[in-house]
Length: 135
Ligand code: FEO
Figure (cartoon, rainbow, N blue to C red):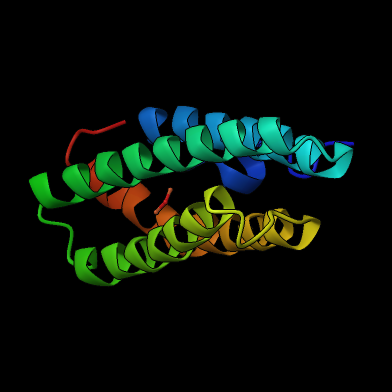
């Protein structure tokens, strides 16, 4: 069963590029969760790397849009992104060094982060960017 499912009702920001990237992140997180639960360490490592790259690209997309349009809550939003990236980069380094494992608790942590962040933090830029002509 999928760990997380994207629906427009629950996760739609009304910014198409963000919605597409969020759906890709959800898909990779589900793949990562499947690899973790099947005990496939090699697949876990490659999906983890891809997921982190996609998340970093997504954060840059949002941050560029917010900065280009003078979004007032940029600093707090970027801070939330930076904290997650630091946590994930630390785990990624330790995983590849054989010093840590990705577990079902890890994928649940990322799910919880997304379920909190997108509706509470990302949703705030939707109307602001829509007013600037970004959809
Ligand atoms: Fe879609 Fe702020 O992450």
